[in-house]
Each structure stands twice: as structure tokens, then as C-alpha cells.
Image 1 (tube, rainbow, N blue to C red):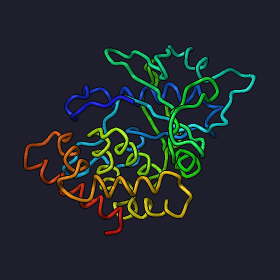
Image 2 (image 1 turned 60 degrees about the horizontal axis):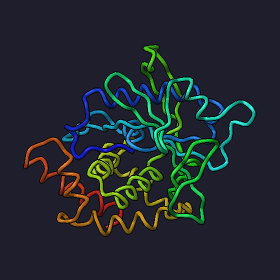
Image 3 (image 1 turned 180 degrees about the vertical axis):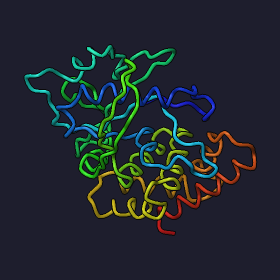
Length: 266
């Protein structure tokens, strides 16, 4: 999963190009739709409003899919073979395609409940093992996505996107694991800009405590350790990611703490 240190580091066309990658791949993977859910930065983009005060919106260069461990193309091919026909190539454990001057990546994550680390081969792609993916697969919403694919054709797809509770669990744990500034910023954006309102986002996250989400307990620990005070890593790194001046960044730090404490019920 690609991440830059600040918002300004992302090329201007990165989000729209990632969306083109999604629109190109989603049709080709039609027989896998029941076993796929969009997570990551694009999911944050589709679950948030475009006019969140003080926040410039989501940004990403990746398409991140949660995938069921049991997903299989059967006799009709494989994920890699389907996407190879769209010029996606294997690069380590990832699939990558050049679009203009950008390298755009498809990443897969899955869950094998007794395991908390490592990877599994699903169909014929390598998927990282992440707690909470199974919950994202079962608790999702369909989002209509419109735009142009890699070939310039207008597309309209109904894409399965992880709902806010499971998405926040995954995003919070991503920050706990790699401490990328973008992950902390995405947590702030996902809550404050959620299409159904910040309170609904908070309620959705807390509902994961009762859902059996295997990533919830660790997400709570990450919030307590990194998001509950202004001098912790979550607020500091989210503020550094934000493109505003010092005054903006100070407000972002305070907003991240407010969000962290609200998710914790404090």
C-alpha cells in the first residue's frame, strides 16, 4: 500500500487515476463481487462528503480490496489472469499498472481468524492477513461510482464498500501497525466527513464491539495509545499530513483528539 508523508506529495491526478483503476478492474472481477469489498483510501473517499470544512478530502494511489479466503474463479480463470488482460502486472505481492506517469496498485487483504500476521494466497493473488476483513465483507454498502476507466470509456458501477464501522477498525489498526500520517488523517476524515454524520460514524465504530470484529480490541488500544492526547502520534502525524499552515495544523491536532476520544466513548 503506497503512502506519502504529506498531502502535497500526492500528484494532483492520483485520486482520479486510482478511481479509473477501480472502474477498470471492477467489471473484470464481476464473478468475485460477492467475495470483494473496497477498503482503504478510496473507501474513505466514497463514504465522506466533498465539502468537509478544513479538510481537503481523501487522496490515494491504491485500490485496496478485502477478499474472502474462499474466493475462487473456478474453471473460468483467476484474478491475475483476468487483470493481466487489462495490463496489470505482478510486482512482488502486488498488482500494478502504469497510467500516464503514475504507477497504480491493487492490493488484497484477507482474514484467516486464528492468524494475525503474514499472508495467504487467495485464488492466485497474495493477500495480507488483517483482522477485521471478514466483518468488512459482511457489513458493507453499495456505492454508485461514475467515471472513466483506463481506456477513456465512461463507466458506472455499483461497488461494495466497507461500511464505516469496519472501515474505521481497519484504518485505525493500519495506523497502529505502520504509523503513516495518511492513516491518521483518514481516520479524522472518515469520522468528521462521514456521509451520515460524525455521530453515526462514532456509533458505527462502537457497534463493532458487539459484532465479533476480530480487529476491534486492537483498534481500541491504538486509539488509547495514539489518539487520546495532543502530544501522541495520531494527532501529530495527521497534522503534519494536512496541507495547511501552523494554525490549521494545531486545529487538526485538537480535532483528531476529539475524534479519538469520541470513538472511545470519552
